[in-house]
Length: 294
Image 1 (tube, rainbow, N blue to C red):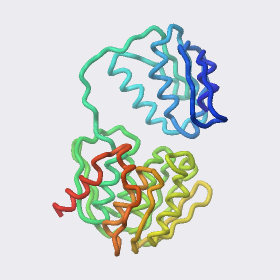
Image 2 (image 1 turned 45 degrees about the vertical axis):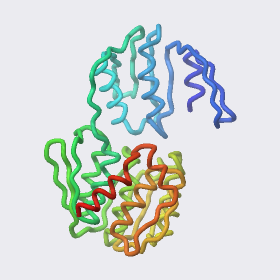
Image 3 (image 1 turned 90 degrees about the vertical axis):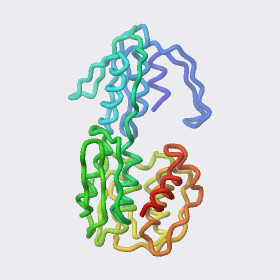
């Protein structure tokens, strides 16, 4: 999905039959390009950020696009630094004028709903949490919708969001447009009596691990009843025994296991927890600090 688009834009690109090492030699020329967006929006985002610097104008067609909200975030950040791209939402096409230049400036990086989701689930299953510096327009803010569906106590005020333990219940949620929510949602569903159903599991096959299989197999190791069938993941919840979970080098599996351990009967040990540093180096330090306050 990377090689052909880059080659069509004048870049020499080669892989080992689709695997690393990857060699790339520019310059990027610009022009018309079609990108497969069915697995991730990240390649499209990268091209949108790079193409304004090319001499030629460009048009990017994102086929079978998912995670459109992240493309919107990309355009918003580009605009903040003085670079523009026009979006035709009906056709998932983006037109980028070449010869632009980024403008330096001061930018405050907003909080990350993908990380906040773990703390909000922690509050819902084990006590109460409040997370600050959260914007309104990230796709993973949908965690609040899922928590409400599960019966958790949820509050939103300004740039803060909070959750608290309540009488939980099985819930349904479509995470197709926000697949990074699957790990914390599985941890949540373990403590929701009844059956919870998550849609969009097909998008998990090409993450840091085969995340659908990892969630199914690793959470079963600690006593959860998780089944994946096609695009659906079903979790029968209510209680969780605990035990040892392997991160498989996936930061979100490690964090989900830790959150699940908070309300489990025996606690959860996370093997390979160091991988959480990919997105959240201080996660386990913050978890200890949060436990000390409760």
